[in-house]
Every structure is written in structure tokens, then in C-alpha cells.
Image 1 (cartoon, rainbow, N blue to C red):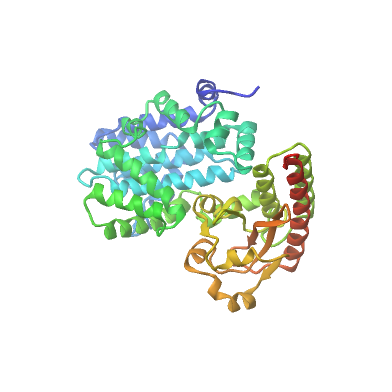
Image 2: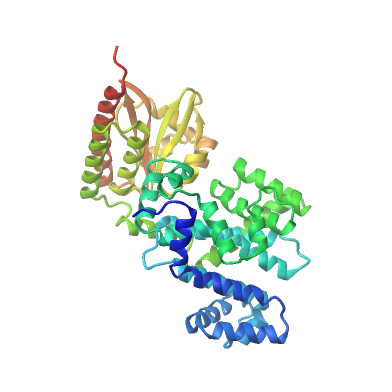
Amino acid sequence: MALKGVDAWLGRLNASELPVLGGVINDLSKLTDSDQTHVNQLSDLILKDSNLTSQLLRVANSIHYNPGGTRINTVTRAIVQVGFEGVKNICISLMLVDQLLSAHPRERLLHVMALAFHAALQAKCIAPANNSEHSEQVFIAALLLHVGEMAIWSKGESQADELDQQMLLGVSEHEACEQVLGTQFRSLTRALVQSWHLSPILDASFRGGAKDPLSRAVQLGDALSRASEFGWDSKTAKNTIEEVAKFRRISVDQAREDAIRTAELAGEVIALFGLGSAHAETETAHAQHGIVVGIPDNKQQMAMLKKLSAAVRQGQDFSGIFQMVAQGLYLGVAFARVAIVLRLQDQLIAKFCAGRLEKVWRKQFLLNARDVHFFSEALNYTEAQLFDETRLAKCQHLFTEPVAKLIGQVPCLVAPVVMNNRTGGVFYADNDGEAITAEQQESFELFVHQAQILLQSASLQIRPRK
């Protein structure tokens, strides 16, 4: 029976292994002073778990925590070398990864956990520097700010699969959560925070525009992490950096420099705690779906075309159909990045995307259709076109700054989106810099051709009768 509502989900999650994580975090949080009594208590708590002990020593001996290279062989030595609060944070981070990651974690779980580690490091950098204990508390609060979402992607089983599918079809996160879970990620996080008696800093961080400087640092760290997905030159990132600069009372240039440096550090820390780099994260997702970029899966293509055909017969709206086409090109034809760019009046928008940069393109892909550039020219094509290195070199002028920021200048395939005998957009696919294979080109042309037939059929069904 499907679970609905925050109370039902809280009960399910508290019946899993997750309360162990909450209990350990609570126990560690009570050890607030680095006097010898608490050092001994921290050491004893860690030594109860042999796996945690070995993982702590591995992380403590990394160049990030031990740049001097002096060998750390005991928990006590780790506390001396890394610091009391630093060891607590390592333990909580390790426990979070251990409790949430299975042998085959979902792509969305890897993504939200990577964002959480990035947010934690940004928040720690932003926090007032006059108290090291507070900066470590800010780290943990930012790390757990989206623990409800992490818990769903980790322990949500079939409902998490359904939620994932809804979001892939273009349903908003808010609407999909309400339909499938009967609650929102944020509500579940707050319930877990209260149930596990976690940090008051974390609880206060849920209030918009928090006045407490520690909670505000958590909010800004989280905002920076998410803004970075759009690129540091994006409007979202620039606005967030300005807020950080104002909060820290430093120049915007200094805030930007610190944010970028911290983001680079986050990549190292994410790998250190077993989540891999952002690229490895995406490759893991490809592996989960059985995708090898550049090698099409004919069975997957046929399966997606059958689903498309069924969706059209059942009267599925265009949003659902377009997202299924994007997924078909991603999963079946094995492209790294896919977008369906539609013309809406004088704008070109990539609302339906799949693969790498999916979220970024959905939110940031916006071009003027009247300007001369790669995508406005693509509206004039009557059939699929391959842009290999040779052809790209001949049309560099079409890769204007806005286009280059979105897609770069890489080998790709494009084809017109035709509805009611009018070109209304462009199918776009690439391998994120790698060459397009001959098999991919053939599969792209066949898949797009079949998709066009189904889109035409759908448009005839939807067209109002006279």
C-alpha cells in the first residue's frame, strides 16, 4: 500500500536503519567541549564501530585533512591532528554516506548528496570565523538540510521509482511529491530533524531570511551549491554571490573567488567520502541505466517508441510526449546530453531535456529566436544534420556567446521538430565533446522520424474540431 503524508513516511523511515544515523548524530552533538573527558567519550563512541574507525582513519590520513603527511594510526591521534569538531564532522559525514548509499544508488540520491557536501563546505566558509565550533555545526546543518529528500531516494522503494518517473516526464518536483508522497521533501526533513532532536541551527535554517548568522550561513551555503549548477557567470550565481558578499562584508570579487575555490575543494571532498566527482556521478547514472555513451540500445529504442505510441493513443499531452522523446534519445540512442528546444513566440526554450546538464538546461536555456545563432539557423533545416569537427570549424560564427555558454561547441546532431506542418523547434543531442558515432547518427534519424510521426498524430488528436 502506498504511503501518503509526512507522518506515514516518518514512521517508515524511523522503522529503517536511519534512526541509527540520527542517534549517532545526536550522541556526537552532545559532546560539545574538547576537554579530555569528551575526547575520551568521542574516541570510545567511534571505536564501538570498527568500520567507522577504519573509514575515519582513511579520511584523516588524506591530503585534505593531513597535508603534512604524518601517519595517523589511532582515533585519539586523529582528534589531535584534525581537531575535535573536525573528527565529529567526518564521522557524521561517513555515517550519512554509509546509511544512505546502497550498492546501486539512484542518480538523484548521488546528485543531492553531492550538492549537500558542496553546500556544507560553502556554509562553513561563509560562517563567522570567530568560533571554530560554530563553523563545524554549520557544516553539519547544511549537510543535513535536505536529508528528507535523501531519505526518499534511498529508502522510498517503488514510490521513489514512481516519483523519479514523474519528474522525468516533466512534472514539477512540488506537484510530483504531492501526488506520489502526499508531502514535500522539506516537510519530511523538518519532521526528521525534530524526531531525531538534531541541531537547532538546522531547524532555524528552514525559516526564510533567517536572522541568526549561523542559520543564514547554512541558507547561503545551500544557495551557492545549487546556483553553481548554472555556472558561476549565470545570473543566479551572481545574485547569490552578491548576497554572500553583503553577509560577510567583503567585496563581490572576493566572495566569488572564495566560492569557486570552495567548489573545487568540494570536488575533492565528495570523492574522499565515496561519492565520486560530478562526472563520475553522471557515469554511474549511465551505468545504472545500462548506457554506454556512443553505443545505442535498439531494444530500449523500441521499448520507448512503444511507450510513446501508447501515450499518444491514451491522449497524453505534449509535455509528457516530448519528455519521453528526450528520454528515448538519452536511454536508447545513448547520447550524453539531449534537449528538445521549442520556439515560443520570440524565444527558444529547452524545457524537455535528459542526461548531463538536464536541470541546468531546463532552467537556464533561453535564447532569442530572432538573433542569428546555431539554434535559430537550425529552425530552417528540413532534415537531421550532423555537425562533426569539420563542419563545426566552418560555422563558428553561429556559436555566439549565449549559445557557447549553454552547449559549448561540440559534435552534435540536430533535427527539426515539425507539428501541423510547421517547424516549431529543434531536437538536439551530443556526447558532451566526444564524436558522434555512425550508429548513433542512424539511430537518431530513425528515432526522430518515428517520434515525428507520433507527434503529428498527437497534434491531429488535440486539434479542435471545426
